[in-house]
Length: 191
Length: 147
Image (cartoon, rainbow over all chains, first blue to last red; front, side, top):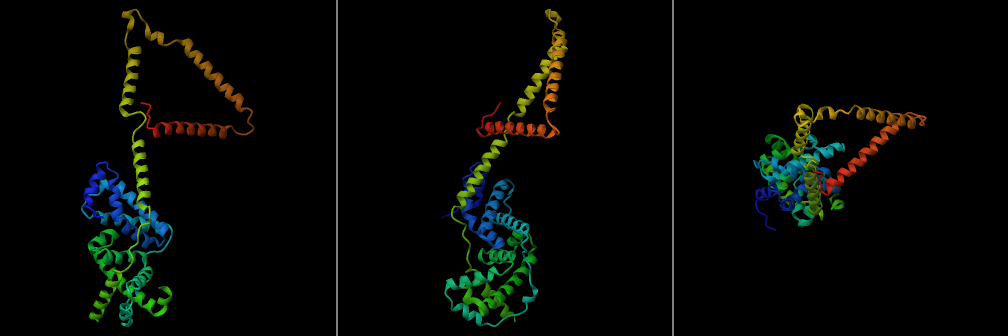
C-alpha cells in the first residue's frame, strides 16, 4: 500500500475526519508494536502499550507542531508509555554492563554467520537482541533497522546525542559479545 | 584494532538489518479505531452540558426580572398591591408546619432504628445519586438534552 505524507492525514484528522487516522495507524503500527514489544518483552503488554500510545497521540495531535517527523513523535510517545508501564511493573530496564565491553572474541563467528541462510541468521540475531536491555534493543533497532539518525533517536529516547553515540558503541560491543556467546555455547539449541 | 572495530560495526549492522521486525497482531487497527471512536463519541457527549451557559444566563436574568417586577416596582397605579400579595403570611406558616411535621415523621421513623440512622441516610443519598446519574446518562447517551 502506498502512503502519502503523514501531514496530509494529520490535517484530515484535525479537521474531524477520524477515519484518516486509520492510515496513520496502518503505516506505523508495526514499528510502534516493535518498540513496545522490545521494551515490554510480552506480546500482550506490547499490544496494550501500542494501543495506548496511538490513543495518546490521537488525543494530543493538536499539540504536534510538526517540527519533527510524525513517526519520531509517535515513537517517543510509545517509548515513554512502554518504559513507564514496565517501570510500574518493577522490571529493570537499561543496565549497561561495562564488564563485557573490552573483550573481542575470535573471528570464526563471521564465517559461521556467512554460512547460514537468511532465516537462521535472523533467528541468530533475534536471540542476541533479546539478551540486550530493552532500551538498548530499541536504540539499536531504530538505528539499523529503521535507519534513524542519532538526532532522531535522541528525541525519541530523551537521551543527549552524545549519550546515544556512546550507547550505540557500547551496544554494538555488547551485541557482538552476546552473538559470540550464543555461537559458542548454545546456538544449536536456541535456533 | 581500528580495523577490527570497523569489522564488528559492519558485521553488527548487516546482521541487525536482518532481525525480525515485529508485526502488530491481526485486528490491531480495528480494535484501536473502535476505542478511538468511542472516545470521540464520549468527548462529544460530555462536552455538551445539559444546561448551556446561555440558558443559565437566561434563567438567572429571567428570575431577576421576575423578582424586580414583584418587589421593586410599585404596581399601585394599576390598582394592584402585588408586593404585599406575594407575602401571604399564612402560606409561609403552613410551609413551616409541613416542614416540622416532615421532620417529626422522619424522627418517628428513625426511632425504630436500634443503631445510628447515619448509614441509612448515607445509603438513601447514594441510591438517589445513582438514580440521578442513570437519568442523566440516559439523556446524554441518547443525545437528548433537557434544554
